[in-house]
Image 1 (tube, rainbow, N blue to C red):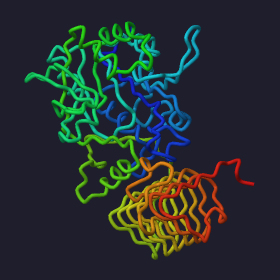
Image 2 (image 1 turned 180 degrees about the vertical axis):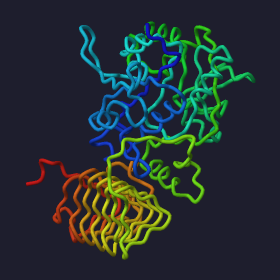
Image 3 (image 1 turned 90 degrees about the vertical axis):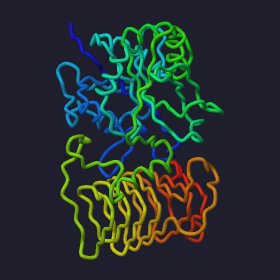
Image 4 (image 1 turned 60 degrees about the horizontal axis):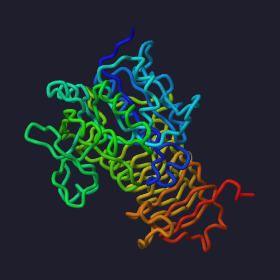
Length: 425
């Protein structure tokens, strides 16, 4: 019988609604990041760099691009006869067929997959964080403590602790109590949503709690293990870790990559980040082009000026165009004579000549101020912006827009312009 010491289950089914139109056609873990990667590349690369060669990827929302990106796992050396990577969508069963309704419910629905590897330990990961972590070191800690479950935690400033699940531990790092988003936190150790369980402990907890609606690790599985006296430990992680769950944190994490000495370094030899790459020609910088402190993906052609920005693969930036503090994703086309400030342009969007974005004063977004804020402009995938229009800040545009959608060639700050495919003649 196959026996793996530790297998990983990677939760990648999330919609990521706080990323607004960036996730309208694609699951959050498949969103582009850092010029050539997708968010899921980071936990997958961590697995192979940590010696974990069996990974189940649980997909649900808009899985097409994620599935084709992962394929059979070749870029991560996860194309294996035994183990490797498996994409695990919800599927129809004889009884009680259901979508994944919670983090632990998704894991429960794949008990047979995990059982087939007869693992000693199961590593639970989230597919939407940017970080580098050696899971082998965490496993060593788990074994050394005789833990049945180990939760990765990160110290956060005390005033931010109320936003997280907080672990209270004794001096040996054993978890004595925990609180979900407490009003008055008693500790600053925030759960990172990364767990190692003894397989026997996890299986028993999943089977016992399977009827809970929206079965969740933080709400059900961890409390159940704790109540039953299972030794739970907190593994403290002090490296770079970013939840890119909001547009602003996503923009910020991209901008941090181009710091002179980036806190999160994509270029380390010993801990590479792997991704599926199309074979593209090299970048081209024209005599009219200028690039300062930016990442430029393969196959991109720069005829204008780019400052402090992350440019994906196969992007064209036209002559006399200025792009500053922006993220331009793969295959986007920016015309000539444009100005883009703090703008996120999703994949394959087209911005025509003479368009100015991120101009003027800030006003709260009219439909989703909790999503579109911090002065950002967000243009959805495959959108079209007609020539010569001026767009303000905290703006969202999605769809094939036309000149008539911009009265006086303007879209003021705080506006949302979404054109459904059926709305266009």
